[in-house]
Amino acid sequence: MKVIGYTRVSTAEQAKDGWTLTQQRNAIEAECERRGWTLIEVIEDAGYSGTNDCRPGLRRALDMLKRRQARAIAVARLDRLARSTQHLCEYIAACKKQKWSMVALDVDLDTTTANGRFMVRVLAAVAEWESEVNGERVREGMAEARASGKVFGFQAQVEPATVTRITRARRRGDSFAVIAKRLDAARVPTPGGGARWYPSTIERICKREAVA
Image (cartoon, rainbow, N blue to C red; front, side, top):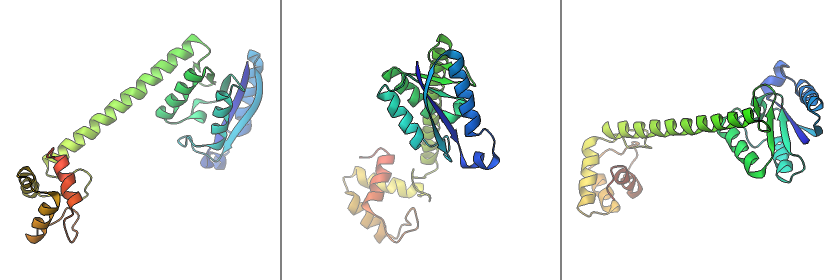
């Protein structure tokens, strides 16, 4: 099987001279020799964080896999490939769709084996769970903002009485521009302490309060 090796160190890791590119390359070469794989190239990204998914070396490796120039990518450690579960699952999805394999030597992530494929399913489930939890937190935060009279997306607080005044006017059929002019005329404080109310601000408040 033709394999691409991938190595990476961040700028901080280069300074510490820790898990070097050479050490990673040696580990990948040894594993390929042990398993009888053909290592066609080792591609490196020096000075790039694992949270950056636009690394030139990684992009090139993924493109080679997509074009079937190799059938697997091997890394010495999983965090060399990605530090984000989301990014990792994106690579795994591409791996399944394009029918190539992924091997990380430090964990049991080897999609050429049953155990490795099971690990992929676990990681995908974790990513889905993280997404759902983050969504719940956002919704809870928005509900708290509404309860306290804050308008989501504004740094400053809008008085509950002002929100009520705006929504009542909107329900009467007043336009956003008319409501803004009335608030300016009444010298009602704006959310950000600006000089005037804008129709777009009124629209955002109405949408937040579910008043079209």
